[in-house]
Image (cartoon, rainbow, N blue to C red):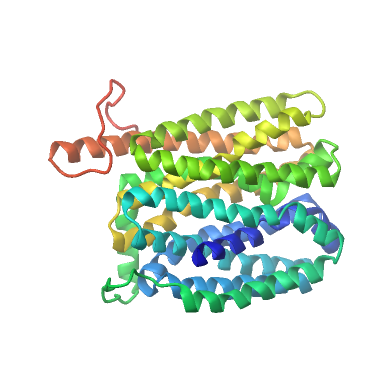
Length: 420
C-alpha cells in the first residue's frame, strides 16, 4: 500500500493539467499548440525514461528509485507553483515527467518480487485502481482548489506533501520479502545495458505487450491529461464545472474495470488478448459516434462513451502481465519499462497532433480528434502483427516440450507471421 500510494501521487501530478489547462493558457499567455507542449514534454520525458528506469530498478532496487521519484515529483510541482513564464512552466512539467517515469515500473517490480504470477495481474490492476484515486483528486477537487486558494498555494502544498511522503517510503518499503536474498547487483555498463534491452526487445511477448499498451491507454490519457476539458468547454459548450465532473467518469470507469480485468486474466490468462481486442473494437465504435454526432453530444451519450473509453487503462495492464510472463525476474523491470514506453509514445504523438490541428483548423475538435482514431488504427495493426508472432513463438516452444505461460491451440489463421 505504501508503494501504491506513491503511484497515486504520481497520477495526481500527471493529470493535474486536465482541469488546469485553461488557467495555464491564461497564466502563461499561450495558445492551443503551446499548451499542448506541456503534456507533450512531460509525457515525452516519461516515455524516454522508461527503459533507463527499468534498468535502474533492476540494478538499485525499487525503494531507492521510488524515493527519488517522490523528491523529483515534489520539486517539479513546487517549480510549477512558482512559475510565471512559459519556459519555467515547461521545465517544471519536464521535471514532473522524470519523477512520474520512476514510479510505476518500481511499483510493478515490487509486485513481481512479492507476489506469484497468478496474483500479479490482480495486484497490478489494484495498483492502477489506487492510482486512479489520484486522477479523481485531479478533477473536481483540484478544480475547486484552483478556483479558490489559487494556482500557487494549491500546487505548492501538493509538492511539499509529496516530498514529505518520501520518508514513509524509506522507512516502510522493502525490495524483497523477508528471508529472500537479493542477487549481487551487476554494474550498469553501456554494453550490458544495451544487451539487456536488446534481449528484452527480441522477446515477441514483450513487443506484443508494447503494442497492447500503445493501443489501449493513450486516449484516456490524452483526454484526462490535457484535451478533455477544452473539448467539452470550447468544443461542446459545457460549463467548466460540468466538464471537470465528466472527467471523473474516466476515473470511476477505470477503478471499476481494473480489479475486474485483473481477476479475469489472473484466472484465465487465455482471455487476455480477446479482452484487448474487444476494447479496441469498442473504442473505434465510440469515436465513430462521438465525432459524427451533429451538434452538441448529449450527456446521456457522453457518460457511457467516456466509461467505455476509460476501460483502456485496465486493458493496458495486460501489457505488463505479458512482460512478466515472457521475461525472467531479473529482466522484468527492463521489460516493464519497454512496455510502458508504448502507451506514452502514443499519448505524446496524439496530444501534440490534436494541438497542432486545433491551431490549423481554428479550434475544430471534430477534425482534430481524428488524430486519436489514426493512432488507434496504427496501434491495433501492429498489435495484431505481434500477437500472431507471439503465437508462432509459443507453438514452437510447445512443440519442443517447453513450459509456456499460456497454452495455445492452432487456428486456421495461424499461418506464417505477418511481415514487419
